Image (cartoon, rainbow, N blue to C red; front, side, top):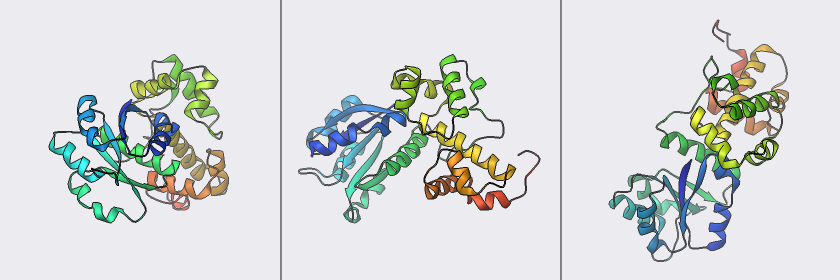
Length: 253
């Protein structure tokens, strides 16, 4: 699991971020926190987290200034800035400092999940979005872990259901951290990314093998939000579901 250090001078905002289940589902754990940005750099140097999430506007030291201080001190992790709408214009130099990305308040779970997936790819050295190969490496038989095989088989057979790390941990009576480690150790991915991949692969198969409406296929693959399904599909296959259905089927598909 990757560790994240949180910096925000507002305790309630900090608590809200740290208690979000999205981080755990995407393979992240808490690596420390600070409500005082002036102390944050020293704490980050001691804990050396994989990434830092920091508010932009803070008394004494802004998120951009903190990033500058961290980079100057040799910090090699990634930094994400959290800003209020419209105030990020003044933080252009954040990216010049090597900042990874930013979130705009209020942060939705979908936005956070998307950023964390991209951050995981960066941290693991994969700079391009993951796509499934023709020979599916995520099938249960691809691992030596009986526990992960059982989880993967269950997810494949119940792909239309709404799954979360919490629901799977309750169903199999495993600790959420243990499940995260299974996916990371044996598949080199996170629970969320795994679910996205198998759902996208199933959607692609249904689009070319059936004449079911795209909206129905979205539901069959676990997406109740049709527009979100189309967006994820386009990000995965670089085309819309309709365009994918109309393209010729190769012998390798």
